[in-house]
Amino acid sequence: MVASLRARMGQFASWRSVSIMFGLLFVNLVFMSPAQGLIPVFVEKVLEQPPFFTAMVVSLHTAVYGAMLLVGGVLADRLGAKWTLVLGFCGAVAVGLMLQTKTTWLLLVIAPVFGLLFSFMTTGSRTYLARVLPLGQMGIGGALYFLCLTVSMAVGSAIGGRIADTAGFATLGLIAIIAGIVLVPLTAVLLPAVRSESDTSEDDDASERAAAFSDYLTLLRNPRILSLCGLRFSATYFYGTMNLLLVLQLFRLTDSVTFVGLYGSAILFIIGPTQLVIGWVADKRGREGPVRLAAVFVLCGAVLITLLINNVWGLAASGLLANMGAWWFSGLYPKLVVEAGPPEEQGRLIAITEFFWAVGILAGTLISGALVSVFLRLPFIVCIGVTIPMFLLALLVAKGYHRAPDDSSAAEAG
Image (cartoon, rainbow, N blue to C red; front, side):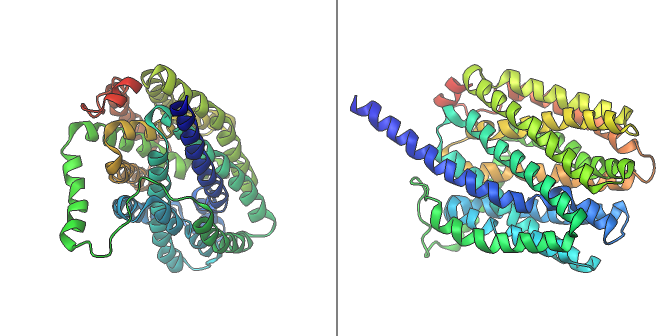
């Protein structure tokens, strides 16, 4: 009786901490989301630059994001998930500065700063979630995490698009700056520390810090971890292409920033509830079905977008299908990563898998930005080729190839 009561109190405390984190993350991402959905339109409409410059901007902050994920993973394991997240929330200020600039060179300076801060937000929030919740609840926990992301981005995209159309991008940027200044100290005060985190000693020597970074090389030599990294890369290569070209193509076909913002909101609101179902099924029935279904949606979406690239509603529907599969993968990843290693390595495991997410986004954005000037469908034809190995890797992961062999709880959950 006493043990059961303690377990319930522990679960309540865990979900209370996670709920506070979700609330702070939601508000922060509302103001950071314009950097994801509206920067391509901002560059074309305000700065009057071609798609390749947009690809450069997106790729620059993505490259820094990917590299700094490795730093963020070590910070989350040593400094703590909470304080890594606090640093990451400064990203709203960077977004505001990006939307206020009127010169191309200044945008190229601020973009990598945003990438740095966004990487800290990612590793901090994901590590916080992994350390607070038990493995058996990570399916629904991961789904709620990415539901928080999707809904906040949907709200931010709709509101941001409307503000940009009526008051201008500079006003939208000013709002983001004010929000960032408020959110950083608020997070430091309200967010509970993770009890299992050990404080970082100031007298840690250089060899200990070097060893933390060298662990990434050990992880990359492990075929189990490589399967997760490969899946993350191939799925997000296609997402990087969509993130750049789908938005621009819809804008060109409709000539409306509001339409692009509302479309982004609509697909995210549709995807959000389905992520909860996918996460629940992964916890109750195992990961196999959800992982396979996500892979099928991404592959089919790539084919349909290629065929319907010049049809507004056909393109919008195909984008919904592909985005649904991509976001399902994202929602399942917290559970997959927890299954792959022990709690003390979660920061670095999250960082290395998200690093390949960034590499995939970077490759998809740069290559697609160059190929689109040759032939509009060519980037998506390449995506079809990339999603085929993604599907094969998904079949391996669905069977549990990525799991740590000595992790009995992971075996039970899978």
